[in-house]
Amino acid sequence: MGKTVRAVYRGHYNVRDQRGHFTKPKTARGQVCHHACCNGTRVHPDRLPVKISRSYLKSLKGPQLEKELGVYMNYSETHEEGFLQILAEVDHRETVGKNATARRERAKRRRQDKQSEWRDEVYRQWLTAEGATNGYFLNKAGKALNVDERTLFTGPESRVKAYASPELIEFFESHPRPTRASFGSVRERRDHLAGRRIG
Image 1 (cartoon, rainbow, N blue to C red):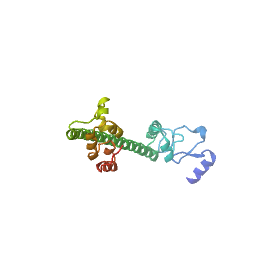
Image 2: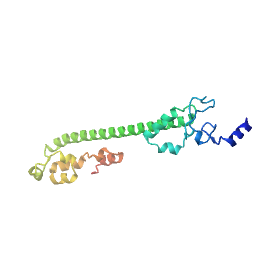
Image 3: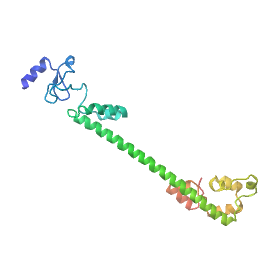
Image 4: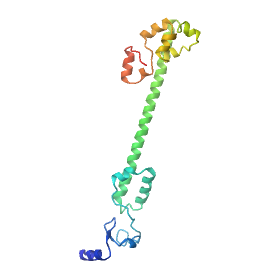
């Protein structure tokens, strides 16, 4: 058997296909495979490796990967390793995509929750300040310009200094305004609760 193979190899068969079979020169490629794996029912694919380079798989974009999967599905018996590699890559990308989507959704919910907490705290402080100042939020300049009182609770501190009544300024000294930053990180919350003015 070995001598026959070597003799044939020297004569007409000079290339091994993906199954390790000796194949004829390029001019004869494309003919049906006569070995037991195919039994003359199909042609071995040209340049379809049994094992796929990991870097090559990584370089493929979504549509290209789907195309490769379609090709390897037709040769899953003879190219099982490559077929499984592609399936693993598809699964990996789907998992990564789902994880990324889940992370974005969690971050979005956290931002929405913080925003809701901040609005609730602003409203709570508004009610407390109203009782502490008897509703006197604006000074003369603020009243003259018809300043929106809500901006004293949500706007920059410079606005408070310019338009807030002495009563409201005194209130803010013992009740720091709930800035957006105060509903951010743990450190920002701690600074806010310690009475530091942020933002």
